[in-house]
Amino acid sequence: MSKVLNYINGEWLEGSLKKFVPVVNPANGKVLAEVTQSSDKDVHQAVQAAKNAQKRWRLVPAPERAEILYKVAHLLKERKEVIAQILTSEMGKVIDEGRGEVQEAIDMAYYMAGEGRRLFGQTIPSELRDKFAMSVRVPVGVVGIITPWNFPIAIASWKSLPALVSGNAVVWKPATETPMTAQEFVKIYEEAGLPKGLINLVNGSGSVVGTAMVEHPAIDLISFTGSNEVGKVINGRAGELLKRTSLEMGGKNAITVLEDADLDLAVEGILWGAFGTAGQRCTATSRVIVHQEVKEELEKKLIHRIQTLKLGDGLDETVKIGPVINQAALERIDGYVKIGQKEGAKLLTGGIIVTEKGLDKGNFYAPTIFTDVTPEMRIAKEEIFGPVISILPVKSLEEAIEVNNSVEFGLSSAIYTADVNKAYTAIRDLDTGIVYINAGTTGAEIHLPFGGTKGTGNGHRDSGVAALDVYTEWKAVYVDYSGKLQRAQIDNYESI
Image (cartoon, rainbow, N blue to C red; front, side):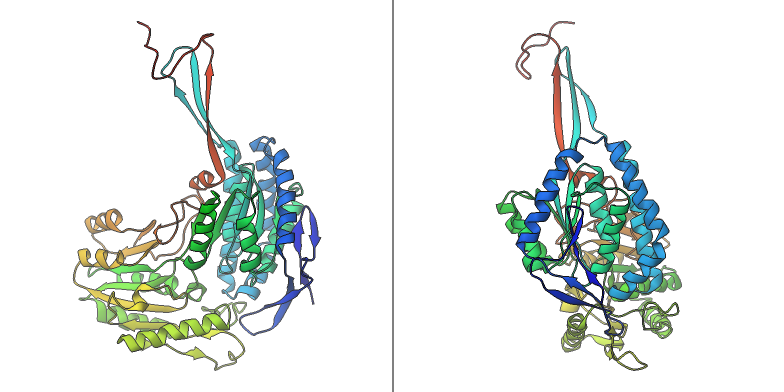
C-alpha cells in the first residue's frame, strides 16, 4: 500500500502522530493509499522552514521567480493525464472534468508566471517640488492555504502560484480525501527547482492542522476555500490575531430562464451546472428560476435529458455523473431531499441513493429535480452540495432577480434570454460576484477574478490579477531630493 507523506523543507516525512488513514475511491470503496496524519509540531516545523526560505525568496527578482512557474506549467502539461487519472480515482469526478481541472492548473501556472514581469505598482505625481512618489507590491510573508477535495489541484493552483510569484512561502493543508493529487502537485514544484522550504505540505485533519495554522504567529495570511461554518471560525479567530484571511465559501447559485430563452441551450447549461462534479461545486446550479410561461416545457426537457445521463466510475469515458465524495455526503444529500418533500416541494425525478447496476459499493445519488419550490423553503436557501435542483416559478424578470438575491450567498448567477436589455439589467442587479449570460453558473476562467458577495466570502478574489492583492502588501515610497524639509499638506506651494 502506497503512503502519502508530508513535504517539509524539501523532505518527504511521516507525520509526528505516526498514524495513517485510508484514501478511498468513492466510486467503488477501494482503498487507494494511506495518508499520514500530522500534529501542531509538523505545522510548526513547516512554518519555520517557510519563514527561513521566504527571507531569501523575497530578494529573488520576480521575473526569476516566474521562470520556475513556467517549468511548473510545462511539467503539469506533460503529466496532465496521469494527474487527471489520480484525481478522478480519489475524488470521483468524471475523467473529462479531471482533465479540465488539471488544464486549469496549467493555465494558472502560465498566467501567474507572466505576472512575474507585471507586478506593477504606480508612480504618482507628488504635491511638492523635487519629490518623487511611487507604490510597490511586497510579499505578505508566510501564507497558509487550506484547500477542499472537490477541486484538489485547481484551487491549490489558484492560491499557491500567485503566492509564490509574489515572493511568499507556502504551508499547504490539502483535504484528507484527496492527498494523492496534492502530492503530485508538490512533486512537480520540487522537480521544477523550487527552493526547499517554499512549498510545504502538511496532511491531517482541519481541527488539528488547520487550527494550528490559524493559531501560528508566523503565518501571516490564511487563504481558505471550504464551508461557511469553518470559514467563519477561521475568520473570527484570525481577526482576533490580526491575521489576514482570504475566504471563498458557499454558494446557492441560480439560473434564470426567461420566456424568450432558447430552452434547449438552457437545459444544457442547467445539466452541466447542476450535475457536473455530481453537484459538488461552489458554483453548482442548485436553483432554476423560470418564467411560468415556459416552466412546464423546460421541466419536460430536463426530465428527458436526465434519463440519458449515465452514473458510474468517473474513469469510464461513457459516464456523465460520478459519485459524491463519501457516505456522509450521501446521507446529507438524502436528508435534504427528505426535507424538500416535507416542505411540500414536488419531486419530479431522482431523490434516491443508487445501488443498482454494480453501484452499491460507491456513493451515488440520482440526479434530482424538485419543482414548485418557494424561496422560503430550506432546499431553496441552503447549500446542499449534491446533484439536486430546485425549480422556482416567477412572473417577471424583476421577480426573478429578487428571488436570485434572496439567499445569503452571492457567488454565481446566470440568465438565459434573447433580450439584450434584460441581460444588461440582470448584469447590473444580480448580487453575485460572477454573472453569466446564456451560459450556466460554472466555468470560470483563470484570468478573471473568482469569488462572491455576501456570505460567499470576505471580499477577496482568487485568480486573475485580483489574486495578487491577496498575496501582496502595498508599500508607499517617497523620495525627496529637494535638500530641505518639505511638509506635505502644510508648506505653501512656491509661485510658478
